Length: 265
Ligand code: SF4
Ligand code: SF4
Ligand code: SF4
Image 1: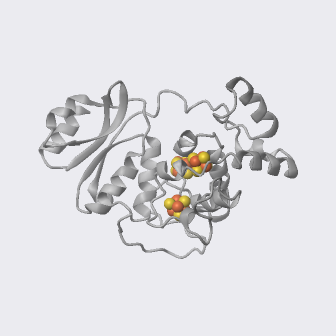
Image 2: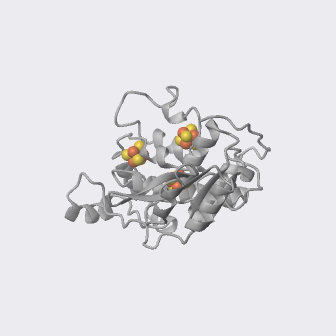
Image 3: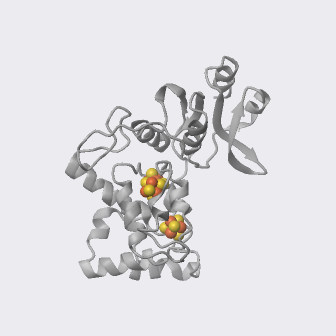
């Protein structure tokens, strides 16, 4: 991997390469360049998961002609496909090195951090939604119970925007979650459930199920499950398989093709 990246940079196949470097014991995202070619010795795969493609999107918005290389796991590649179809990245400007998916399972979720850990899991099972549930299991609660459980989860929200900020496919220049017609600004917690429903609707045909939002959420709201449900509807009703191809049209409920310009975010 290091040799491949070194060759790409030396031969100007890419201008920068986004990967990981160990800094004080932590694998952190790092931008490798020809100018600092010796740093390639420090390039690692690591167990960390960052949205390198989101960084690539921001860099490409400011420097559209830059050729960018990056490490990709399966979820990164799905996110890249979404970013290509939404014209946020140009496939011709991207080179990838695929690496194995995370060696360890995604985080084992307990409950929100403000509860005592030993009490958290049982309480969550009793009145909330376990993060490891699949959509079908979560739907087995009766309608009223299900509503209460989701409200319990959503009311924990701190409106930190971590879920949006980490998300590789949240690239909008103006985000509805900060649009005063939809969401009151300056108030914490957010209005529940509108804050989450707005984001959930936007994830239809975009979310590639990487789970980063849920990992980022400080109160362990089962966001991934929520977006899986939305994408299940998109798949069933519209036969749209999110992130599976760079050649499909952006998902649009009206069924009309969308043409987008590459714009800074
Ligand atoms: S939450 Fe919606 S509006 Fe905000 S960045 Fe994500 S997709 Fe765009
Ligand atoms: S799982 Fe979360 S972070 Fe990943 S694409 Fe879906 S909404 Fe974004
Ligand atoms: S990361 Fe969690 S707490 Fe923060 S805004 Fe998103 S749902 Fe709310």
